[in-house]
Length: 236
Image (cartoon, rainbow, N blue to C red):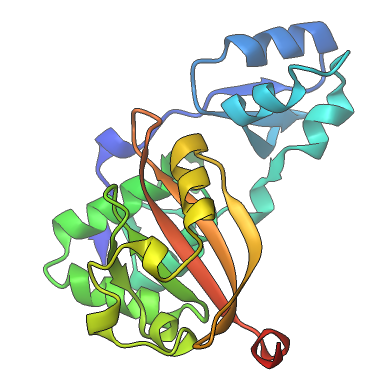
């Protein structure tokens, strides 16, 4: 178990959807926070990624409340934390961009980004590397972590099994030696995620996702390659 730093807990900036749509859109457009929480009848029920939402709707002719709601993430799927976090809770945090933080009375007092929770884990836990291995090995898909030099710097055991390889043939090897170089270039040059790509060679048949790792300056600092071993792909 470890505790959260108060400095990492961000304040909740919110807006009620029960107001004029022009005022609603102006508030979103001027919001300086990465996440904006939505309220209905004075109750928090969802949040949006402000930058992603504005990028998606900027070319549309008009803004509607339904447009906002269709792109909002329900708080029912967001993990709620107290100041102290146990290991099983980490598995819930990984699934979403943020987690909500509650005080001793169960009231929402802020939120924390997934990356900040994991960073706190490394600072406070003497066995953080072992805990990270537990998390990685518990994920059923194969995971490769690629650094900014485009070399594979980490992986889980499932990943090696799915591509029929060994550590000496993977660790510190250029990712394009194993996976599709064009998709890797696209992720690094655009910051976009490339999903559901079939990758078939003499050694493997897998479905691959290429996802960027974005740093605090909104630059691509690396990427995560996720592979899934599908029977039909293997047959192909």
